[in-house]
Image (cartoon, rainbow, N blue to C red):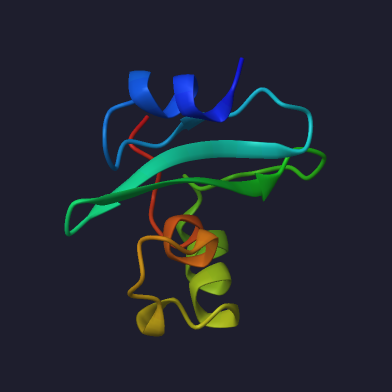
Length: 83
């Protein structure tokens, strides 16, 4: 499936599982009439966003307070997934 078809079917700013073998998540980032498909997260590493201590350590280590651009993977990695 091409990236264009994938982007057309996805809702804006809603992360989902990627299932591509390389990344954990994907999201169609939308802002100011523009959209971009962003993939992030390492599929081979464990992900435990529900543990508050791990979440805080990740946010501190990656300077999540400074991430403001929705078109960057770091912005989405710093946000808690919706599921």
